Length: 213
Image 1 (cartoon, helix red, strand yellow):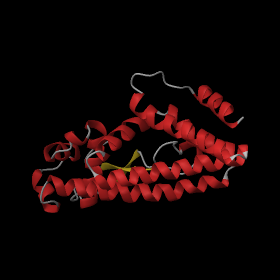
Image 2 (image 1 turned 180 degrees about the vertical axis):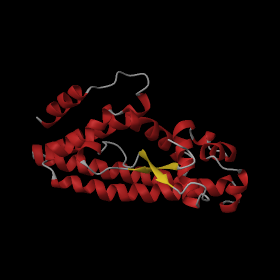
Image 3 (image 1 turned 120 degrees about the vertical axis):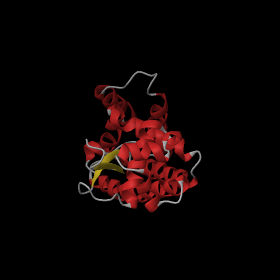
Image 4 (image 1 turned 120 degrees about the horizontal axis):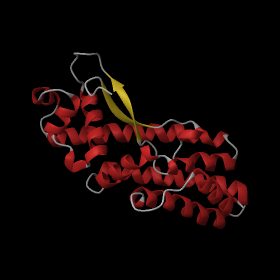
């Protein structure tokens, strides 16, 4: 990928095979600009989000983002007064895209309940999500707007999982407990994934069999 021409933005594919069991909107997708054209404010925010995923929020400084995007510091100051203004633009972009992803994720309601659960758990075996997941949750510790949307996304995913389990098992209290088991496991795996065994697709299927009865 040419960093001059493609700058990522956090998006989510609403198709069943791509829907995660954690907060929506994690996998970067390219945002293109014409070769030689000036980066827009939104392009800068997208480039900074990719640096965030690679290096954490501490790695998002003006020089790092300029190097990643292949532009000069002068281009940065065309749009932003300082690094804090860039952080604000990053948060604004990510929060807007995540809320859109949640609206897309709601389309899973059209699937049968077990297929819905399978779609939301298979991303546990997809390595491309975990760097994004960890970086965003770490950033949320110092950025209230990101923390708010992550919490909103967690509640939303919990409600989807709980609803599917209620349809399958018919008992509200049981559905709530099992939804917690699946959602908390997904969040925990994002942080423990480096040192814990990675579940296979077959193991995820077995987990679903145990949970759904």
